[in-house]
Image (cartoon, rainbow, N blue to C red; front, side, top):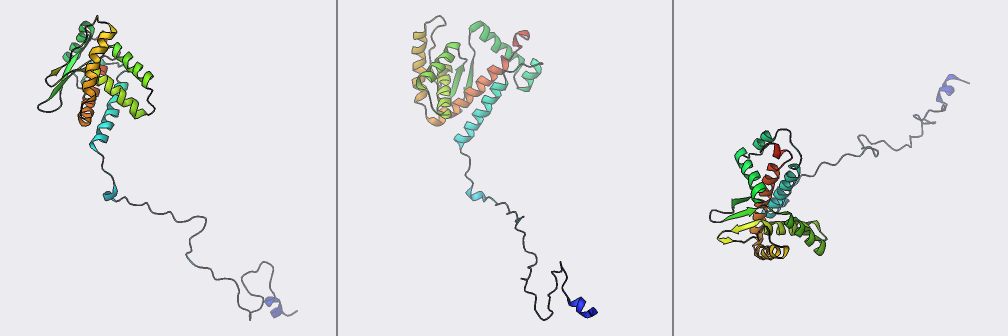
Length: 228
């Protein structure tokens, strides 16, 4: 066999040349720069048009503030190693903390005034264990199905239990030695007043109440008896 015929013979594994030089290669042409099926191109992140972003409403912002304040109140129940430093971090004067402790221990309650506007102030009072039990009873009876409904019930009852005065309206509290019926009667008067508030005012006042509760919880942290 001649050298020329040997070179023209196709060899096993030779897939790059045709068996006959007169026959064109029937393989489909390979496209260059074709994206691989195994690794598709990652789509670019869609830019959010600010025109279509819904702004946060005042009510939603107030609700977020309440959640933040409630979380801080939970954190305030943890003991501290340096009570005086903690008061300084919370921007509470030691004299104010001492007054709060004395009022709670000796009088059984502490009151504080807050401004809702330049013309309107409210006074809030710390709650008793009877007020806590009243909220628990209301939840057991009403059994709210949704978290928002339960939160509204708790805030409404706590506000009614704490509201000492609203502007020129002064609310009476049953004496300390009064029975449960008398305490509930004075509470019902405050509850009826709170339930007739404009919703926006209720929301604003609930934030004041949360801040008040936060301060009381901070002052009464574990170890307060050793400091005052």
